[in-house]
Length: 263
Length: 263
Image (cartoon, rainbow over all chains, first blue to last red; front, side):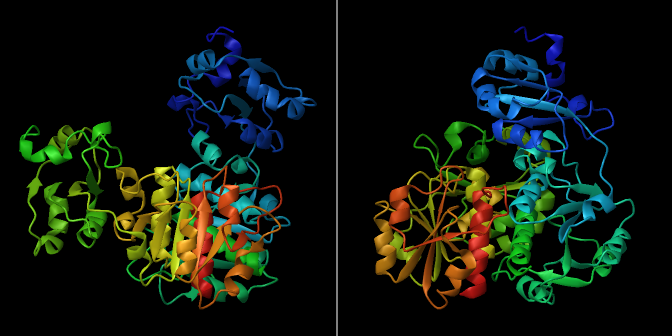
């Protein structure tokens, strides 16, 4: 296959800024990389419109693609690298148009545990949070202000594709959306390093059977004070002496774990 | 200051392979980047032999450097970038010679919780594990086969300097070193995704008051089967349906957290 073939345009120059799905200037395509993430895209609300991969990786996807009406293109690793602009050792890509965003009401429907993020603007942390949410039984993610887009390629990759599967929505007003959570029966927990806050274990053990929203702020600044005040409970991870903080995705994982243990 | 000044040689071309402290061809210098990590180096067994920084960052370190006999060089961001080979937005560096390694006996002395790693060859994961160990009350780290070096610059940075503070040792024989742990009164827990294993919470609640070694393998392959067999207990993180694994540093953090909660 010729790397300049226009059928590969959906996969061209993926490192270029105008390919980003999260920028107004971007082409809006969501990219899945690797067999596992492509499988998760096929299981998600993101419907791929084309695949590009090596013989071997497309072969591994044969069963997944059997009933799917999507064109796929075979190419060697060199041709793929020339089209996409770098060497991809995962060997297969899928591109899906960005579907309409879900509403807050849609993602809260049936949810018992949601993660609520403020100021998480690092794509790697965001991807990790989605992976942790999926693994530790969080039903949905809600974005307050200042968050990065979970559909950016790196976030999707780090999430192992769970950014495509865990439903998320953008809060139309912030932090007022926390009232919507309360109106839907959620107790809102704000994570803080403040030593006066309740421990995770104490807070979660008081909420068995309740719906819970876990509010996490960016590493460094943490949650804004007016956001913190809008929460019902402040909770902390007990930290060893001489240490101050954990990575934001790790802190979120501990809260998700404790919630799953005591839900 | 002239970027070619030989007094800056300890900081020259830091991205070049022969600067790595973890390769036989490397110069063996351990590099701390940023005010916080330099402070942690100053508090550690790694004694810096020179610092290089901007006026502002060296000013922030004035109190830490007051009683320390180490030369430090002031330079603008441009001169620093020319010497080290890239732009460093943390603004200050310290370089320490690599001290002799600690022995297993030294790091186990007085320890009640240790992390034991096998095949963790990713510097970022390794750095995260040290950060998590420090924050969640793990006393020491023991390396089995196949682990990356925690003194590589990226690992030190991701660890927030805790790779310099949490004592670690390399197991001289593996997995036989697990017997040394047992001889020292440790119960050895092996992390596994196997659904037949005990949950973290169940396993840790049976070990209150005991010394515990938490054995973690690389993401993907996990622990080798003969390593798993040499452990006392197999433990798992309860995972949501349709998900298989967490990042290795995240999985370790959950085990450290559960141990700290129930120690």
